[in-house]
Image (cartoon, rainbow, N blue to C red; front, top):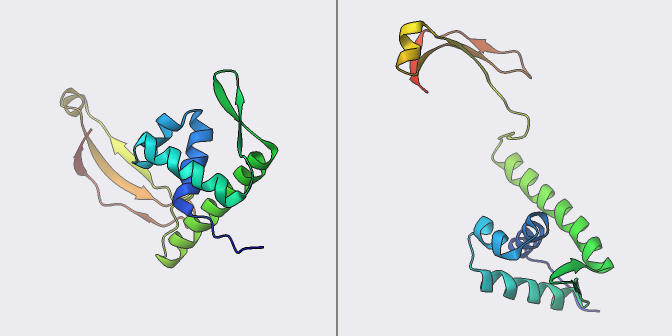
Length: 136
């Protein structure tokens, strides 16, 4: 049995195509041409050694092997993205800042707000800088 290493870019195209229901739409999401995504998927089937898609009406549906690979592809991509965030020491998932805005009738006419401060929900850290102007 040969050693198979799946390409994460190909996995990302595969997942995007299934999620969007169209590999033409997936090509826009992953920044590749439709023909490039088709070539990626053909290579993915070759690596898997089994068909991942079957014809269903005018479209394609996943085979049982395709469903299995989709599950692994999602996990691999999640793990990859988690690792990338960890080594950059950035937690993108769940990081949210709560901004407190103050609007006056005068600023509403100009679509401006004043940022009065912010709070990071997880740690509870807050800073109150305000008022600072920001356009909205």
